[in-house]
Length: 291
Image (cartoon, rainbow, N blue to C red; front, side, top):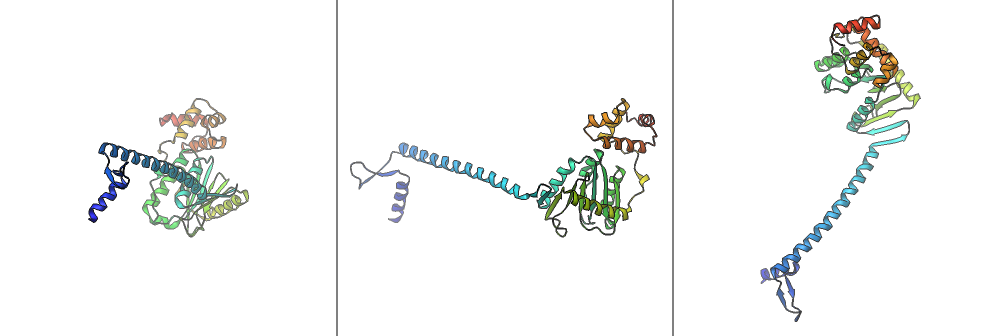
C-alpha cells in the first residue's frame, strides 16, 4: 500500500529500518534506544554545522556593515567629506558641533511646517551652554509658527544672535570659521550633506553668510535677553574661578576652552550684570547668589 511504503521510506531515511547483516535484501527495525540515539547525534551534528554557518554569516554581515558605513562617509579628499542620507548627516553634524570651540554660524531655511524641538532638547542649547557664539539667520516665514518663534526667542534669551530674512539660498552651517557644511542637493533635504574644510570654500561660505547676515533683520531687541536666565555650567564655573582670583589664562586651561572663549564668557557676564570691572562682576554675582 502507498501509505505503508511511504512510512517505510521515512523509517529508512531516519535509519530506523536497515538491511540485515545476514541478508542485505531483507530489513529489520533498529532498537528504539539505538536508533533514536543515533538520530539525535546526527541532528546534533547538523545543528553544529548550521551554527557554524550562522557564525560565518554574522562575520560576513559585520564586514558588509563596515563597508556600508565606509560608503556612507566617502572622502573624495582630505578636505571634503560626503555624508549620504539625512539621518547620517544629522549625526555627523552633531558630532562636529560638539567639538566646536568658538563660533557656530547658520543659514537655516526652516519652514513653518518643520518640527521644532524645545530649546532645552536642542543641540543649540548645549552649544550656548559651552559658551560658543551663535548666529542664526532664519526665514521670515517661520514667524508664522508660534513653536518656531518661541524656539528662536529662547535661543535669543540664552545669548544667541537671531535674525530673519525673506529668502535664503540653502542651509549652511559654519563651525569655528574652519568647517562649512552644506547640503549635497539643496533641492533634496534627505540627500545628505557635504562637509568642506578647504580654506577657499570656507571663505566663500563665510562671505555668503556675512552677506545674508548683514541684510537680515533682528528678530528681537538685544535688550530683551533675560538676565534671570540660570547660568550655564560654563558660566557658573567661570564665575567661581574668577571669584577665586583666577586669571583668564587659568580659567581657559582649567576648563579646557580657548582663551578667547574664556574672555568672551567673562565679557558676556559683565554685560549681563552691567559690571565695569572684575570686582563689580563679583559683587553683582554675589548679590544674585551665583557665587
